[in-house]
Length: 317
Image 1: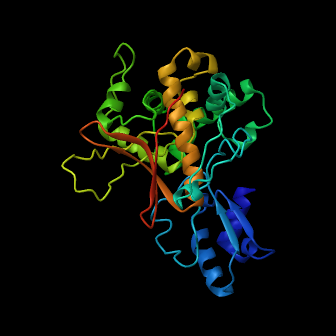
Image 2 (image 1 turned 90 degrees about the vertical axis):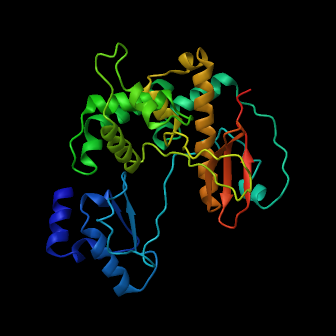
């Protein structure tokens, strides 16, 4: 089917562009020439809402070098929040908080065991009807496919699946921390050191590819306009797009997390960061973090374009 569509685009793009709108093109980056055909069609039709392009990887810059400005809007699709999966009340509005409205938080009804389960299940729509065991296995299978095939497919660059797996495990161990590149590199060595750590350029390349595949998404540092003598630390906080991916990389189950409260706390911080990103995106805001050389830190800063911000401290307890 995909081959026929690519052939149709090459012969006459109208074979796939004509018809009822909006027309959806899934994994459009597989046939990047589609971008220019769509851009011209939008110019010709002068109507909004003509096409929807979806993809599991961000295209390279050269694919979209012919600008889509004023023609195409980009929207990041994220895993579901706890509210969307039915595990949070939605009683507090982030947009209202950013507007200065006071709010009182109702007491959470989720137990720590339920939270541990939600961390390994993740916010994937396809898991809503699966058992916990099947959902965890599906996430592991997905991450394994990323390791074996997809990371090489994203830009047609061969990558070693074993080395990718070692980096994924290192990222899982350092999720929700400001682990520097050197620390990640050191952690890619085998337990006995026999495998040796990955090269710096290899790790950089793999991290870039994982980010393009929307597997990881770091949390940048916040730079407030303060006249302080304290030096602001610029390191980003490491996160997967969903805490279940970190759990899958470590093959962690709810039972193992409950026996390792430190890791459980890190995954909880990543869970909250995931949900804040979902809510912040709806408010045209970004999620950052703050840390300085005096030890002062804030887990999450949600900042809107106008400069208003709200600070969040994440605690499991």
